[in-house]
Structures are given as structure tokens and as C-alpha cells.
Amino acid sequence: MGIYKHLHNSFKENQDKSKLILWRKQDAVKKIENPSNLRRAHTLGYKAKQGFILARTRIKKGGRRRQSLRRGRKPTGFGVFFTTKQNKQAIAEKRAVRKFPNLEVLNSYKVGEDGKYHFFEVIMVDKNHSVIKKDRSINWIVSQRRRAFRGLTSAGKKSRGL
Image (cartoon, rainbow, N blue to C red):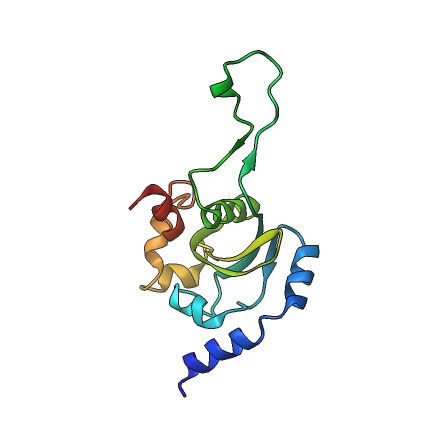
């Protein structure tokens, strides 16, 4: 059995509820040291070198709720509950970038869900780091700015229909 198959099986075996209980108590966006699903992280471009940072984000399930409106409107414009045009993964990437504004989103993947939340791990890159600037496989990200907000990540492209 190859290393990636072994990693995949070990991730599937370790999918217990105790991790989710711990993650639920932590901050909504938290910097983490190592990816929980190493196989998926490597597939999406993560490397265990300086300049690569991981953040776990927690997003509430379900649609979004607006504040109730105070003044008169037609019933069509009154919508309190509505569905966002973006998927939850794209929202998670944006929240991670707002927490770490000096980093750029490379990609993200889902690591779990419980009854109330979705959990994503966002792979981010420090584009000002010298190791990133020298690495030819990733230095293209240095010239891009605010990828998550412009819908240039994989999750953002899906919600744009590309």
C-alpha cells in the first residue's frame, strides 16, 4: 500500500466526534500547525516549508439571516432569510483572509461537519516570504492580490460558474 493510500485510510479512521467537539470550542478562524488531512492538503498545493500557513475555519450551516427591516417595503424586498450566491467554502476562505490580511489563499478543503457547523482548512501563502519568491512552482502567487475576494480560488470559481 502506497503512502497516500495509507494517509487516506488513517484520516478516515480518525474521523471521530472528539475532534469536532474541540474545534467547536475554538475560535471561528484558528491558525494550525499541521493539516488534518495531509493527502488532500498535498493535492491542493500545500508544502511543509516556510511561508505556507494553515487555518481552520468554522462556518454555520444553513442560509443567511438579514437584520429585520424597520421601515415600510414591498414584501418582495423584505427577505429576511436568503441563500448566498457563494458556497460555504468560499465564505470560509474570505474569513480566513480577513483574519490574516498579509497572506494569500492558495486553496481549501473540507475537514468535517457536525449538526451546526462546517469546518474547512484553508491553505494560505505568505507572498512576501523569500522562500515563496524563490520557489518556481508557487511564485506565481506573488503577483496576485486578494484572490479570495475576486473569486480566483477553486471554491470562488465554482460559485461564479466557471
